[in-house]
Image (cartoon, rainbow, N blue to C red; front, top):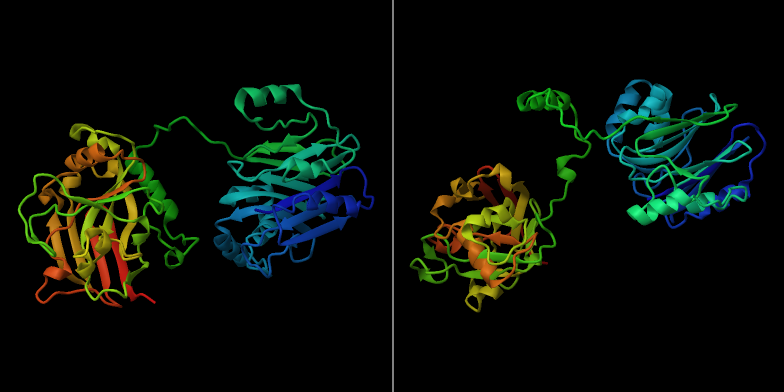
Length: 477
């Protein structure tokens, strides 16, 4: 979050009041505590308060083009700036920073006001073009970043990220807008473009403001709007083909290797696990008969890590084991849920590796199943509408590429509706609760000889129609 402020005298080219510009800008210090910057030219002043995020050493603002004729102050993030940088460099523009801000000035040189249509992100900025003597304001499509403005009686246009920046100017009228007050009590907020003051407006989402020196009033134009009406002129197959054509040859803004995966619900309120749900030899209890009811245990949320993160082998055990499982996430709360209604309470499905310290499990299930970062969940959640029959999936677990578990989820002794009905009798189920459904034959403790996990081992839990959860084991430090 940064803050911008400034003013433009559309009639005169008199020296600006630098102290006033700094006062307006510094009223936004809470938005940008790291640095400040100012631009002053006859009749125009731009100010910026910076919260450093991208290019910490080279992204100071105001920022200029090559010859200093175009300058910008900006709040936000342009997600596709790397692709735009390459495109603009190919067109001959020279970049001096690695900041997303710089694509604004070079993009303006190349495409003019249409540059905003190329931005994907959240932004509010003010750009001054010295050659055209034009001030240009723009706000992102959904209005994530705020921008206020006011045209004073003497032709001066004020702007700022917050209303308080404009209120520093002594010539700004403070007349309340009775309609805005009524709107606030009716809606709980004041709809754009109104504000509480009659003489101050918000630049609406998806809008541009242009004011050239000598013009009486700014020109405001909408460049984007959200369409709520469905478009039935194209079928699903044609729509998918259009998307594939659009993405062909495009590079991702962020490399997949730079993504950190979290568990599908990193702050899950409950993680409930079914302990025995396939006919097998249990790794601790030995041969088991089909139980009359599901047996379950609770796993602490911090026992789970995400896809591609390191599983931590506890120092306290040499019997660190794996179990590949199907898990699901509750999306709709319920208590005493009937089996016939159960699937309607599921938000989606994911893979889970239930890590266990088998020797500690003999102390208690809770002890063996809850070592921090010893289990994993992911790589993502596939929504329930994409998996109409969770009993028709294939579960496969591999260690260092070698298959150690394979089963169909149709072989579960207690199907998912039964599990939900049973657990919701014990406790209310709420959105974000994770429930794991148990593991088939093939865990390390039941290999001959036992095959426990050590540092460097790679475990993959794959479920058809969901994906593959992959983690590498590391020793606890």
